[in-house]
Amino acid sequence: MLSVLSILAVIFLLAFLTESLVEYLFGAIVEHVPALDPYRWLLMYVAAGVGVTGSFIYQFDLLHLLGDYVSAEIPVHWFGVLLTGLSIGRGSNYLHDLVKKYFVKP
Image (cartoon, rainbow, N blue to C red; front, side):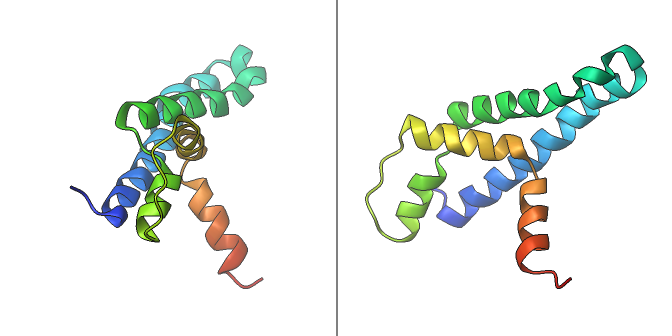
């Protein structure tokens, strides 16, 4: 059985991979086909779909992990899996925004 921190590390890696691969596979197409540029905003929904799909496949639930970490009984639930998938789809900017907002002095 994996520890809470190990699973969290896998979730962060999945977030990074999701953002990177969606940008690599679909962002490059949008950049090279000028007619698709108005639809660039759809990339975030593609990433969200990939993140939610991966989260449901692997049953990643950050709320359940938090419960394990603080010794609270929180079962894996579809809502937690959905929120985790949306967080994964948000990608590694999530971490960058967090660090920039709270840890970097202006």
